[in-house]
Image (cartoon, rainbow, N blue to C red):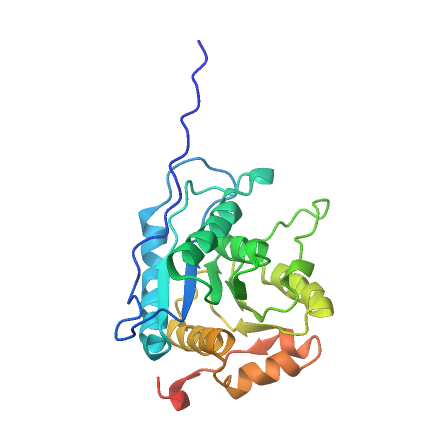
Length: 253
């Protein structure tokens, strides 16, 4: 007798990291989306979840006075799974849940790898104000339909990719950013020279870049000069902006 597939567990928002400590209200939310796999119905990897926690803590700490709450989303399963796009659907659910909990506040989706693809795909949600995509996994099959980008219009979008990423081709994220820039001028992309998929080598600079982008996009703080220049520059300059060593040091951390 054929076995029946077990239903997937429900997605969860995850415990608030920093939960806007010191603020009486939550003024904005950043949802961190862990990496995943192209095809899998297995439970999400606890390690993938844990890898997003340091950035979640850095964002919550930097955004404390703005009332920023950070959550690492727990998916139903670890796979994108073709047209089911489970991770993108879970990201959309997480935005709905954030709005239910916190009300009409700006939301940033910040994903890594397959989670970055989910952030870009779910970025058209009405409550999403900004999208941060770190080392996004994108389909390499030239016969596949290109990832949609027009739904991102009106939202600042920042892509970050290591030039030595052997898992997700950096040129694919450049091509997506190039298409997105045509309809959404608030798109930029930074290249992290010599770094790989995990973006460990320059994690301090990447955290500073993420903090600068999220606080600027959600709360109107002035962007650092490199981010301002990247957003203003025409392709390809603003889409191949090098992330300088020591980024963020002059910003006070």
